[in-house]
View 1: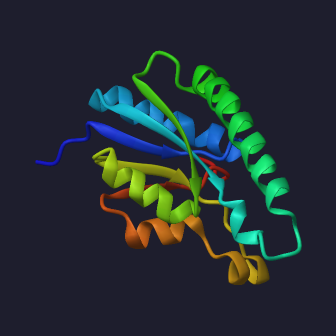
View 2 (view 1 turned 60 degrees about the horizontal axis):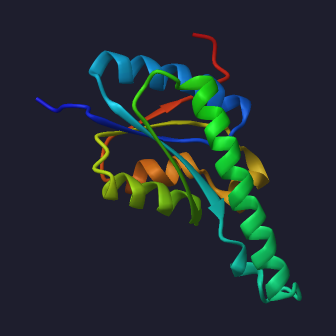
Length: 149
């Protein structure tokens, strides 16, 4: 029988992540699992060819990373206190980083929210949740945080 010992919880610090945190807490308590709370800072260096000075992008990415680390600590304290939590901030392409960290941390389950992008926005940006579901090394529980329970 499969065991859930490690839950990967990708967050983006929005209201959606706050709502999904309740499910993560419930599952972590039920299974006695540890939680890896993950925030991925988009890799801005891919925009270096768009007439933006390289040093400006490096500085911005550093500031985003530091701000994300502070926000992660606040998020964990507010929503996941009392659980065994590894707060983690990394940079890269969001969906692929989530799957990479899931594999590296030996995650047994990924719990993440869906945001329901539609139309042109979905065509341009796709769905992170959809990409993770298709490529994750473990089961993925997606939660629509705006549906009534």
